[in-house]
Length: 314
Image (tube, rainbow, N blue to C red; front, side, top):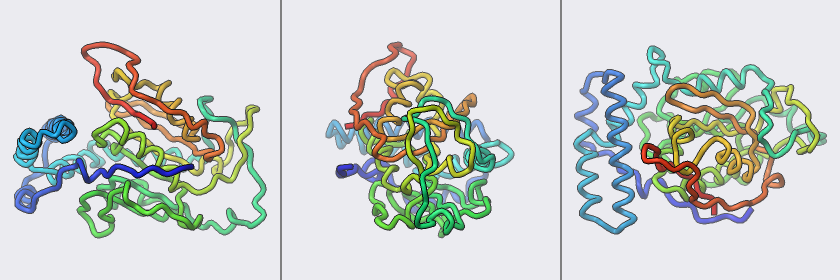
């Protein structure tokens, strides 16, 4: 698959200030209501800041940066996000992933690139695999549910790490593994894609996830065949988005998201919708399954009350 120079998340995501970090570290735990309010305000300012940068309006961009700093900067945003992951608030989205993976067999939803069949493993690669490799992008906690799974090797990334066990790195800059043994069984993008400010950048991030997943140990088949073993879940992408991004957007709905993901070689095998979030698990069937389609910004559902969340694939 030809590679394109990815846009960097760090080019549009504001950096936290040390002065603000010290102040927020003494701030007591936010209430759930205040935390959600801070997150919404920060998201709005971030989008306005990104738009100002695209328009070349440095003055406006600086004003939005100042407003984000006044809220506590990225440090405060991360604290609010982490606070929302507490068990008492049911906020750890990785718990859904663990539930799906631990059950082993997936329920086919019929929106993929084809059904799959186990291929021969002449080199015994699968027999040598003692652990599942998981890459968590935008990680805020080293004690979430997926980190506690047995037989899992975790690599954790965040743009502004708050923990020594979380590597500070832009996913769009992370070197693509050339050794198959260094690739992953699972890539997690939980409330990460919605942080990418532009539609094309979202598409680039989704495409890039494929480069980090190990080669599928199966053959894509046209005939129906249910996935009924743990192995048939892998490799996969765990994608979590705010529910309105999929269910109240002018430019995206479930069917269109499936078309985009299918074009990258993904098949939807699990999904869950809550009042606030949409959780999906996508098995990757390999580049061979990809139609290499392009998806432009196209209005699907007009309406003044809808949002502008959009994914573009070039």
